[in-house]
Image (cartoon, rainbow, N blue to C red):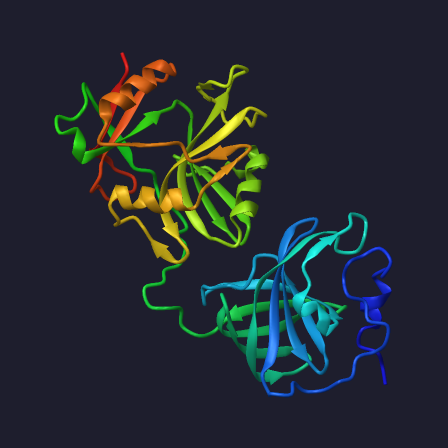
Length: 349
């Protein structure tokens, strides 16, 4: 009988990798309790991807899914059929040494059981029941000489209230004002920076960055792609501004769209998160959700805001040499593409 793990063993040196490398072929058997297991591993190799592994005939049938399992029933995701893995891989996590096959950090994203509805050489239909992942998925071959080209699609309806990530949200803008609002307690205040306004669409560990006039600028800021990998598998639409930091650590205007090593993405709003739009939520609640993501990295951060204390925010802006503050009503919703009086821009001068 052919050894289903022959290719797996051929690609790995048991003396160099922490991965399980069983010495003998596995016995092909069905799960004792009838409930087959699965694991999804997040794999930071040459590029971030997820590995879906399904228990089948004594081994783990495996697919590498670059963007993770789709949640939107209208989207198919690439799934590369890889070699079978040993059952011990259900619990594997660790650092595969650089230079070895699959070198990089691997963590367990989810695990659980599944029910199989169909298993053919070119199509697999399963219902996953995991800690973080559930739903009916179909994996199907799309051709190719080596049989590795597959796709995966979710086929059951998404949860109630779930929405697809928007393709485009135009930024909301403040209205210029001569002074701070009279009732400061009804407003939140942010420091204002001159820079490149940019909306970040983060999905499957990938980033799509659009300017205020809908121009694709992702390629101009390659260092910002790390933000998407750090946030993965969380999906979100973020609003912010690209600025630069001078040698003294001060924020300076970034008037061009050319990437520089001292650039920084300052994120001040959250427009969509994990299948739920936040456009209709009050500003204070959006900021609370945004702060909960704890976005902080070498080239991105969520700057502080000042609820109900406009004078303090304006004084801080002057001390930092910034052009002003933006006052936002605590109950204001996000109005895409509009210049609204519920947001006010006040100069420090």
